[in-house]
Length: 150
Image (tube, rainbow, N blue to C red; front, top):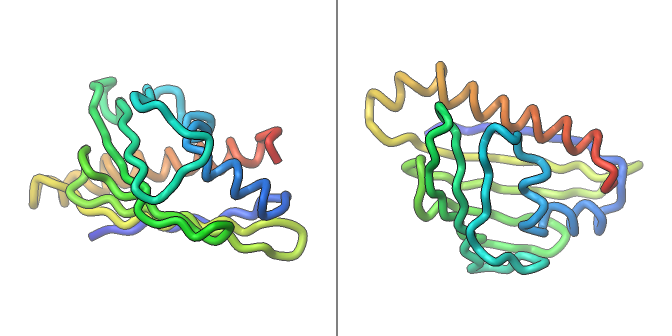
């Protein structure tokens, strides 16, 4: 199993940060365009435990792939967890943590994941998957820093 962890300081209040990140419709705003992120589900304004979200992404070579995630756990103003139900990973568990700190909010993403394809997946990890995930989260970091939402 692999893990990616990113922490970001956001100069805003906890409620504003929570409202932005807990609204499923905002995910597209912080996802690179080349990912072809297209939500197939009618989305509520605010997520809830058990919410299933279906979307199409194009993570490699522009090939569309269906992905379904479930909002597994929500603790208002503290954290939420989404898990893949169908998609490119064998396991995908994404924690989003929020903590009020002096002058803003500290947001931490922890993604724990396992790849399919056994040894082939392990070989591809550092060259393809890890690089792509780091690129996506680098984009998110910059998108949040430059966002007018905060």
